Every structure is written in C-alpha cells, then in structure tokens.
Length: 504
Ligand SMILES: Cc1ncc(COP(=O)(O)O)c(C=O)c1O
Image (cartoon, rainbow, N blue to C red):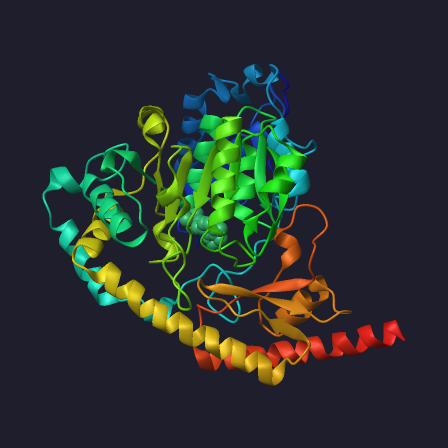
C-alpha cells in the first residue's frame, strides 16, 4: 500500500455543475476512467472524502456516493481508520486500452481479419462511398419525388393496427408468407418465372442475397465467372466469401461465354445481369443465355441472375429473364425492391431452384436475421392492392422522360466531350469520354460542381477497357438534369482543352 499524506492528487477530475448528469455520476465516471487507465496506480491512497469534496467544490455526500460505487465494483478498497486505496487487484495482467490522440482511440496494430476479407480490402473495398442524396447524376436511386407516400403510409399504419400476435413477434425465417405469395404472382405475370412461394426467400436486399449465396455455395478459392465491368456490390460480397473471381469481358450480347471457357472452364458459380448488364446496359442475347446454361451444366456450377432493374424498360421490351428459360435448375434469381420501390426498405428476395430449397430454408432458420415484418407486410399489401404495378408503370414513363432529358441535354451541351449511350431500360446509362479526359479527373471536377458521375473503373476488375462514366438519370427531374448537364459541360471543357494541349 502506498501511503501519501493527502492521498493521490486527482487533478484531472473534471466535474461540470451545468451538465445534465448528476455530479455524483460524473465524479464516479471520471474516477473510474482514471483508475482503469492507470492514472492512479494500484495500492495508492485516495484523498479523504472531505478533502476531495473541498477541492472539487462539491458536497461530501456526492464524493461518498462515488466512492461507494467504486467500492461495490471492487476498483477501490477501504480500510477503517486509514482511508480508501486503489485496489491491488488492478496489478494483475489485463488488456491495455488503446493509446489516444485527443478523444480518438488509435490502434497500434491493424486488426487481424480473414484472408478473403483482407484480399477484398486490398483490391475492392473502398473507404469512400459515392453520395446517395438525389442530385444529378447519382446512380442507384429511384425517383423519390414520385413515390406515392400517402398510399404507403396508409397501408403501413393499417398494418400497425393489426393483431398484436401478427405485428410484434418474430417473423417466419423464410419471409412473410403473404409477401412470398405476392412476389410469386408478380414474377409469373411480369418476369416469365413460374415458381412456388416455397422457392422464394426474403432477404435484406440483393446485397445480402449475394453474401448468403456465396457463404452457402462457395469454398475459399472457388472460381466465379464475373462480368467485367460488373456490379460492385455483388463483386464485394462474393470476394468476401472467398471467391476467386474470373473477370470475363462483356460485349453487346452480354457475358463472353467463349472467353470465360478459355479463361477458366472449371467454375463453381457465374454472376450475370442478363436483363440490363451492370453497368454497360446490354441485354444478354438468347444464344449467350443458352451457352451459359450449357457451360454451367457441364461444369456443375450455379448461376446468379441479378435482375435489379429489369422492370423499367422504356425502349424495346427486354427478353424474359434467364430464370424463365432455365431448364437446368441451376439459376438462382435475385430481385430487389431498392429500385422498384426505395432502397431504405432493405428488401430483396431470392428464387432458388428446387434442389436448393431445403438448404436455403435451413440456413434462413439458423442465420438470416430477417427483414422487419412491418416492412414485408406493407410491401405485400402494396403489391396485392395493385399499387406496385401502377407505380412501376408510372415510373417507366417518368424514367423515359428523364432519360430523354439527359440524352437531349447532352447532345446540345456536351457535344463530343461525353457521348451518352442511349438506354432502353433502367435508371442509369453510360457516357463515353472524349480522348484526353481521364475518368478520375472528370469525376473530381464534376463533384466540385455538385454533379456526381461514377468512373467505369469503379466497376472494373483490372484495367478498365473503356474510358467512360456511369450516369444515373432517375433521381432528379428533367430541369435538374438539364442544369446538371450544363455543370458537367463546365467541368469537362477545361479538361478537354488541357488534354488537347498535351496531345499537340
Ligand atoms: C447491380 C445491382 N444489383 C442489385 C442492387 C440492389 O442492391 P440492394 O437490394 O442491396 O439495395 C444494386 C443497387 O444499386 C445494383 O446496382
């Protein structure tokens, strides 16, 4: 025991009489932190309660209260007649807190993470995320301004007035029965997919579906054919599950199956976006679809079909889904409500082939955290009452108008700086940059003018094959699109001039 006439000084204790927390609680928390962080060593005597009360300008009862709480925790011990001491038990080995700079804890070592996640960190997982506020030309956002909030709120509030045993308990692991039924009907009528509701599993967005499928079907190092350029979320999810991605080029007919066979005839999984290749926008031809199905059957591989925005065609009607022509039973279809309704739902679904139903059901029961029942039930009602079909139809017209505003605005103001490739469907398209303008500098200069464009390189594995940008046109109205085009032109013009100067 270290005896000191007046006890430890405890100069760092800060008590604020105006703070909402009581002085006793503040003093207790401050002393606890000081003791645990080694600010007073084990065995050191604390000041007498009266002395500390005088020094801090608080009542003695406040100090006694804090001491009693520390005593009850075993952080200090009290000896009748000789005062209170920091417990000797704190001498024993214990994890040391991370060092601090200001208020921020700084770790000395990088935490150990799995090999696959470490690889994903090194290659794909970026620190920054593109902004997700509606403005020209964010991708991945539907038209919030056109969402029927009143109908949605009415259905959601009706749900909360329902019987408590249906609203408050754990939901079914596979998903809300009414929603699975509604999705099955919708898919039959709109995406050419005939399936039982038992084949449908509700998940927290497509992103969770990719992760789940990867976890269930892949062993570390398994080869996965992946469209290049391709979908960022799916790529990240599969890599984190240990996939060895085989980047396969795409052309106007979709994934180059011949090239994939050359690169890696053995594969365990293929990931494709046949209705609207992400990000280039091509529709996979029927010949390619059959070639892919045949290759998968030969290799004993599964195929993920990501149908993220297939409902929103406004040019030619796209051919039906890959799942609808699949006779091999190898296609796992993933759908999302992030585009067709809104992304805050975090709601998606998987249609699994009959052979996988049992496995998925067991995994869902054991691991899948589930989507709130209130969300699932509201979406089911929204579909059943016909609002979903009306909304999608309305959105097709709105997106067609917004797409036209982008194409026309670009023709007038961007000229050859950025050549917009017209789309037939979806919520985004691509633009080809003039030679001499780099994607990265274009994105940077545009962002400085509050215009968001996404370089194609973000979607590419290895060096990007094309010099271009991905532009969303769904999130803002035609006037804002026009203004966005003007600002984008102002961003690109000086870059083009600089590029031309470099070339002469
Ligand atoms: C290719 C692709 N698939 C699926 C999604 C939807 O993912 P989630 O359902 O997790 O929002 C997106 C979102 O932008 C996407 O770009």
